[in-house]
Image (cartoon, rainbow, N blue to C red; front, side, top):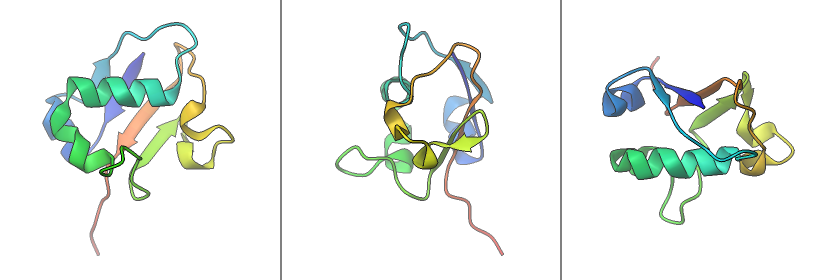
Amino acid sequence: MKANFYATLRQITGQKTVEFVLPDEATIGQLLKQVLDTYPPMIPHLVDEQGELYRHVHLFINGRDVCYLENTLNTPLNPDDKVDFFPAVGGG
């Protein structure tokens, strides 16, 4: 499973796209856990003290924000899904 990282998250990974090995029928939550296990400096950027994804973080599967999917982080992943992690972005 390949995941793309943007803005400050890309600085942590050192690359745009990272490949993760997940079990069959893995969920987006399992991918998130593996991302955080692999890159602990991302923890304060992605999840709160209870391990919940921040509302201002956007995690997309095939262009759809996970927070709007019926199963949210329990949404199953397919090997060819496009996954994108976007941190909060400010500007004006």
